[in-house]
Amino acid sequence: MCLLDYLLPVLKNYFIAVKVVLQQLFYRSFILPDLPRQDGKVAFVTGGSRGIGYYTAKHLAKHGMHVIIAGNNEADGNEAVRRIQQDTLNEKVEFLFCDLASMKSIRKCVQNFKAKNLDLHVLVNNAGVMLVPESRTEDGFETHFGLNYLGHFLLTNLLLDTLRKSGTCNFNSRIVTVSSATHFAGELNLDDLQTSRCYSSHGAYAQSKLALVLYTYYLQHQLTAGGCYVTTNAVDPGVVNTDLYQHVSWPGRFVKSMTGWLFLKVS
Image (tube, rainbow, N blue to C red; front, side, top):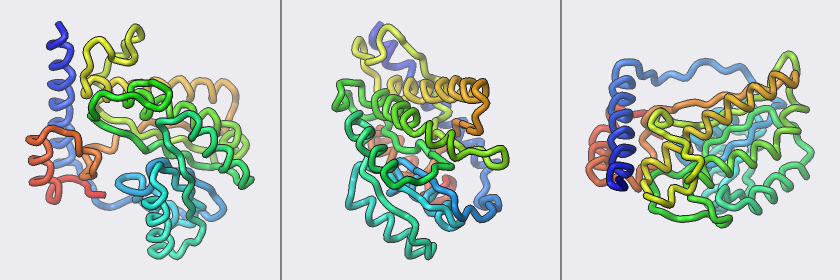
């Protein structure tokens, strides 16, 4: 039974990955849609020092936003700030330390952000881990669920008052959460959220992404009912050529390395 619980998520995840890659081959676009100037607006991007988060932060800064990059590596974060400032000529880019695997660190990060007395118009919940070996966060949660979901859940709720205050009828504040098509393979096991009975990194990852999607739907329902000018979305970036795949099995890494530069979006 344990073997089946392990293999099913693996097969589901790779089936979905193949489907997504095929879709990208036929429907991929390398041109970003035009974005009007966003001067005076503030964005908060988790995992913004590399990969998808870095290019998201850079794109927002290019259009005039004040961008806060949150991450758990200060050296990488400061280097990302330097490069973005240099490339966009926007000095309003800064780094805040935030370890999403630590509730204490998240609370401290939000405290430091609010001390700046800034509005918040865009929150991008991008940071995450994928297929890591079985481990626990500082607070004892399974790492995928604790970091990908619970970390962003806490961060979002702590920043929600600022997002509400910053949204207007002419410009809704936005929460954009990076999920994955693998949420279709996820099963939310409320009796074993820690996946301690039979650990599968594929199952744990898919569960964390499913939780993010469900939270997004629930949060939007609550915000709409409360008459708040805040829009929340969960997005699937597709298969992107980043170092998020470092824990993927070697055949998967080999295929990605051979095809990534030609077919996949690169960040």
